[in-house]
Image 1 (cartoon, rainbow, N blue to C red):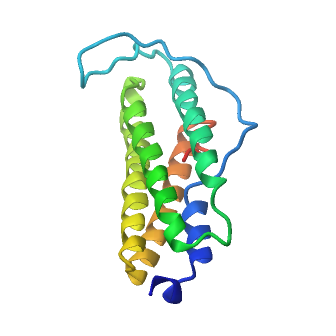
Image 2: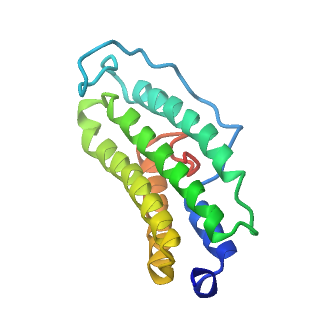
Image 3: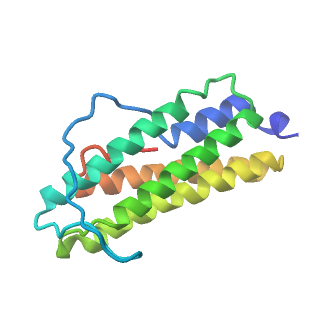
Length: 176
């Protein structure tokens, strides 16, 4: 049984710590100036500076923070493995939504590769949150432990990449 191999409380702490917590005091957001366009195309007005791009991305991350805060607040050290599954799925959905929203922004031309690496890390957080939920539900203790560690590793990558680029809210490790 999964609970015997790795305690639910320890797994919850590892999994949700990897996915951050709410930081309601964050600031520095700015609105996005979007335009309508066909599906699958960038619908945000072209950004001319890194500061403008960061402000738009941080505004998206602020929304993700609020959603993640609601999810994170439901987990405690007494959270069972079964109770953790829907929280991880909700977390995966938040990361997926954030990744899709960030992808619609247009970074400054010289920053596309760096921004792409950050967005990839957010996508991986979606993938590993969902995979961890599936492993817990299937009672695959060893896989769950490995996935929780991988999720934590991607959180660290996401945070470091964001800090290196200059994000303020997106880089504080609390987006989802």
